[in-house]
Length: 442
Image 1 (tube, one colour):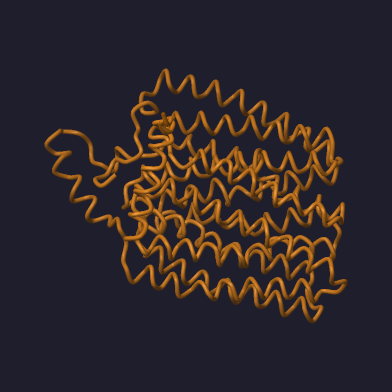
Image 2: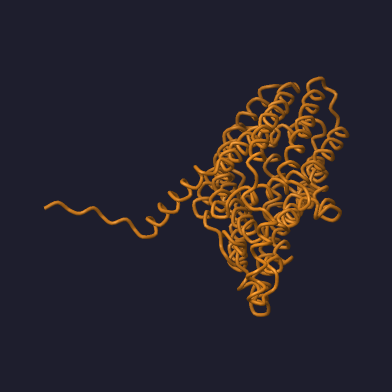
């Protein structure tokens, strides 16, 4: 008598059903495929600049502080954009703004390639181009996040963010090793110049994809959501939908700490580590990061509906990051470095998918640009603090001592976050009642 096949576990069967549903929806949504391809193309180019710029700065000055200052100058305009132009993207077309920013990126990267090729680059020019690029990035980053929230269905947002993260990490795993080999193989500046030109060509190739997405139009329109929400709110006697979707500013404080102390320092620690060792084996860090990101994305595809759940997961990611910095402080051997950066990448990716997906689903369409600007300021805009802090620590202390300090600061922040969350849950019911999809079509 033949044995019956073992039944598929209900949880696994549910995941298969969700994946099949997302696949069917995705096939009917060409915007999703276009934005995914756009993400891959721009990631391809950015991975070359990610390696080329730190090597260029270190070859010019040899100072980790200069590297941190360059990153700080590039990220500072995001904070200024929040205070002076916070509502700009709510009045403009985010996808059109993103297209214009991408065109400016082409000019910036092409100029960096030319100046580097002919040996005319100086640290002062790098500062100036970093400032100009930061101004463009201050607009492009929230515009891209707002475009994704408006042009992709809500049901696809968590899985879409997870898929984008895995696809980007795959490119970021393979391409920096290629870029690093290109740069290390060239003793002059020609390898660096070629890396900048590859970035410029990649961004130029993405422009037609953004134009195609814009022609299809957004899935969520602010006017439609406002009109649809108004009758039900009047009948129920409840406040307008926009007030139901107000995001507590303490949420952005958690993001700020995540950027400055937890995940932002990696932007300086990793290139300094690669430059100090000068060993191509250490480019396996990108493989380790891909492994961590892929593992985290498998569990982060379903976003929490309530803010308290998101914060709990965020604090758990802080704990994992503290463990990773402890490993780096203990030993800088290749195996330890790979394990530490695998944990950091996984925690950062899980935190990023959860926080961004919850925010994109929770915000009303008419406020998408404003909240994405806040998100940009708390993440990319806060990067100057992270890079300057890390650069100063590396200048004054050794690599191991710097990671020890980061581990201790994260542990203190984790304790403060737990206390704060418990107090808010006891005093502010909004943390328990604020749900993600507040608008129709969730």
